[in-house]
Length: 385
Image (cartoon, rainbow, N blue to C red; front, side, top):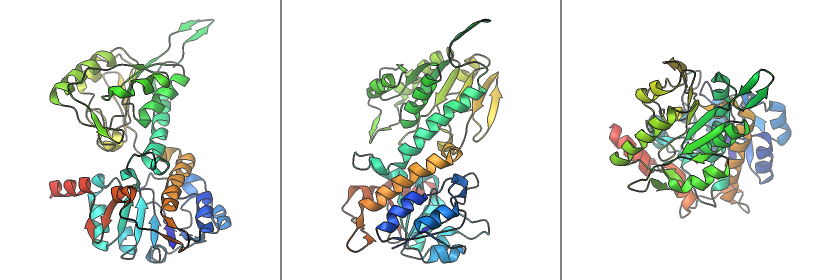
């Protein structure tokens, strides 16, 4: 089996799908790997390291993608700098493994189906115990939570910790984290390590112990119905519960120095939780870090990918934060892909085993046999049509 690693086409993407160490392990299984020169440079993995691991360097993208049985990428395929579509360069019948976020990239998914590509999206892998080692959503969300706090700390005109100095004592900053998924828990832990007093909320009250285990104080409301969507994801709230949540958020946001939002519905869609009234109720100098920006933003005033100031409150809405820590982000992403590929590797025949009775393969397959087969993506396409 031949695996291809092309350059990523997104301008702000510095990660690479496979690092040299993972390539070495796959080659030991009998896989042939070819890579576009410089594909790992943004993550500080030089071409020489890939050559040493046994990877072939192929400069012609048409040759690289056209001869591959399996293409691995970080993000969804798109147009290369010369205008050619990556999907059009892949041979019909090939396979693709990437973090597609298919409901956000409907055009790319449609192209994959039309080309006859069997595409697997790592962000759609079921969140089961067996699949944990393949879960790119979790590995990259950890980075989002960590880096988001650091960005907020730089923007905040205060210390995070309480400091007793000869000039007097500074009180510790108060940080409020909304959403206690992987990114939220990492944000809580990081803010706590920096010395802040951290509180947090989530629509799933069962995460209270997790919040407290990383140093946060749980703030919650009594829900009229469960907000657990399964697989560790949050579901959308009812109108009554939304109103109760809004009141709680307004009250608590006005008391803190920094709000970090990480809320996503189904791991993809960012609910609008912070409106203009809440922003204007916050103290001058306060900071909001909208870590739901990739999903559309949790704050109605966020400018995606930008930093703005409203009424003395600084709003940060950074995009693609994992790409800002490309070395470790790539290393973790690569291990996720390695675990996925080896889980279905047929060692005697040295090939990838398409076991369509397996829940993981079925759950993350987006296109197959010329059709879009992922239910949520199909629904989004039909809605768009």
